[in-house]
Image 1: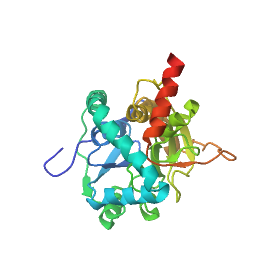
Image 2 (image 1 turned 45 degrees about the vertical axis):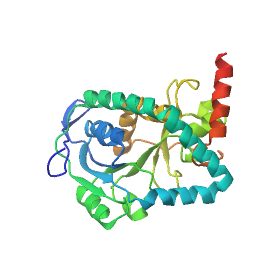
Image 3 (image 1 turned 120 degrees about the horizontal axis):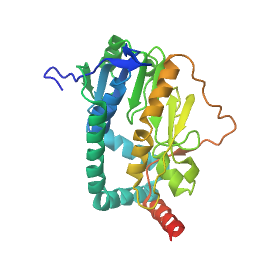
Length: 282
């Protein structure tokens, strides 16, 4: 990172030809080093990374999320949510943090350094300063790695569109923690990531691909699984994004499929998932 708040990007190669294939922007949270360091380098390896929007959320933002979740599931069920968070913090977070640090180091080594990239640090992806910054970037595509719903005036700024790598199979597992809820529901065939284009809804836009890997339901945490469905498929996602930019990608028809909206993990559902996984391997 430079003293001027910029990071580095680099020239790209597509089909063996050196040059800038298309311009891109990445939106991510300040505390997500996987996105800021690893995925930014990945995106810069095959596109002209024109800008980074880094979200430094205000203190009240987390409280607003808590209020929304309580409204959605009720006080009693939110206690289940809180119990899972406490369990995860006490028994899994430390190991997952170390695992993620090693993963980021591997990604940084794999994709290398970047040349300087303009960076905006802001409290919201929907702020006027964000809009002005993205407009200045003149991006073809934008990758949104954030927990905030984007306003239409923001996600329509890139000429081709804004895309998300959603940790869940859509439309069955929309909104939050789709991988967790597929596992908690015993629906292992639908544990994966969806590449979709942002529209006015929540994970309802055109779908361009599904991606997964051979996860270990018994031993891996929900965090590792929802991370690896992305990182194990970076080459395939790169190829699909290039295909989208070139106009050759066709959205997947999901008409007639059930659509589900999910929220934060529950401890009771986590216990059920792990019991079921242990019984399979017993």
